[in-house]
Length: 196
Image (cartoon, rainbow, N blue to C red):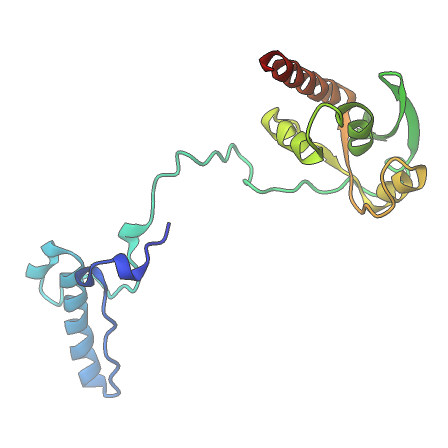
């Protein structure tokens, strides 16, 4: 977190060195400027001679936080977006499959059947959770990563009515992951009902 300059004591601020055009004055002023900067930034540097002082630094590294224990990287970037499914005829072949008594659009990608997440949300989860954003939060907590549709798959899903006409992106999820999500949503809902 950055600290406003107004809150930093004047003695802690590093003053810029004056710029000189002559080479002899430049070397003399830079060494004296380094000594001044070092002595003003740390009390132990006051006894250091100009030749032993650290190079002039315009940034205060002592204000940078080195505590990264609260950030969980677990091998992947924090804000990573998976690449869309490869646009091949096999991946773009859509079938209507039965899920919990309703027909849902699905694609087979790399041998795995993946169902349309927004359509499954609309059919089964809408009455259980606040919105699709809540579903994505739950998926993150459950460590389930949905698959991003390619452009052709989105076009097919719009044509089938699985997603609304203005939607230009969609995600797919496996049946197993959907069941995990569904159970999480129904358990959360039953806990809310018991609290009332």
